[in-house]
Amino acid sequence: MCTEYGYVRVSTLKQKAERQIYNIHKQYPDAVIISENGTGTTMDRRKWNGLVKALKPGDTIIFDKVSRMSRTAQEGFETYLDLYNKNINLIFIKEPHLNTDVFRAALESKVQLTGSDVDCILQGVNQYLMILAKKQIEVAFQTAEHEVEYLHKRTSEGIARAKAEGKQIGRVKGRKVETTKSKEMKQRILKMSKDFNGSMTDAECMDTLGIARNSYYKYKKELKEN
Image (cartoon, rainbow, N blue to C red; front, side):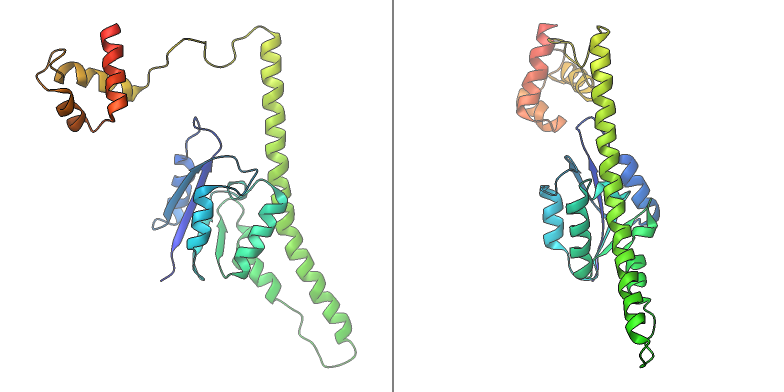
């Protein structure tokens, strides 16, 4: 049985994958989501590599956009052709003209030969059509690569300008950032732990809250400090 996979990727821990997942499930609700955090400038990604190894002929990988597959033109183009030749379907929601079924149709739309001398010309036309189809795919990955290079350049320029203006870049050293989850956990620990306002032991609190030991004692320490 063929399987549909949705591959989503964000470049940093601060970015969220929800938008990509929403776009994929909106059109392919049964797609199995494979989510990864890491740069797209290399194909050396653990979850991606695991997915590729698990694929069977006829399976489908769905991307929100082509840059989620790769932002490096060379590797992206080579990977596209490799998966295509293994009969893996590739779907790009925001660039449907790059889908493998479109590529396959372009390669199969050959001019029929006539059995006459003119066939030498028609064969040349068919070869040219194949070159055009492959070039379209290659250009798409080149464009994605240029887009990320431009974004990195704009980001670097923005940081440099902010520093020149004396603005704070990033988190102030020594300042703790408290998340909504940590606030909620601390409130529950205050109510449940016998060291505060509750009657539960540490083990009972951790089991009830489903929280890791390190996080639990970190929150307790911060509560006592406050």
